[in-house]
Length: 247
Image 1 (cartoon, rainbow, N blue to C red):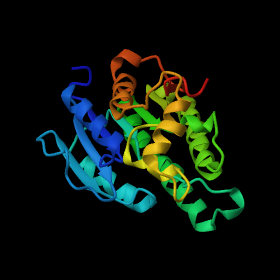
Image 2 (image 1 turned 180 degrees about the vertical axis):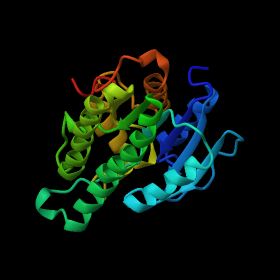
Image 3 (image 1 turned 30 degrees about the vertical axis):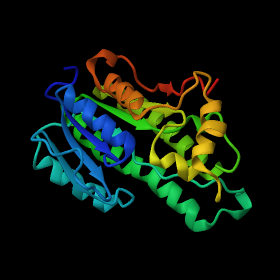
Image 4 (image 1 turned 90 degrees about the vertical axis):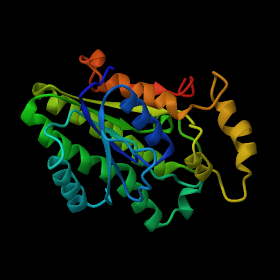
């Protein structure tokens, strides 16, 4: 029960990684607030877990969601940002302005807005852990994902900036770099017309030295560690959960 009685916010809670993180945290005794745009309630149908639908790309919507959280819990112990938007492999000259803005809004701006509100509350109690999930592609790029890579690279810099700024308040901020993870989102990275089952084996799995795709549970385990007291002196770090993809 490594996060027993701790209150955690999980964004992107309705996705593959989000559900795995939520379940792991609940199993370890946490209260979970799930934030996502289109929640369907699964698997958050437990007494110590509730869901708030919010467009996290809008500052006022995030602020409103956090006010709603304040009405339900007395203290915020952790924030795990799993919200993400994929880029279909596209040459840079073909990336539209709308696609660029969507990637930045979802993958970067939403992280800024939620961290801003979380830090505001964590400062009052002088403790808290923030975990922002980025991507190993920020360090080991693949062709055609330049806008996605830029949005995830910004998350790393933002997190390190928060880590140094908030350290005096006992607040920690860290990044997880997943390798190719076996979720529905993986199929969104390949170019149009690509067979995703073939791509999983020929593109993604072969890029992982340890020989398998990352499972959502791998990210859940890493998130649990970074939110627990076991990592109380870990801040500003980038943890690769990638099976060696970044080597």
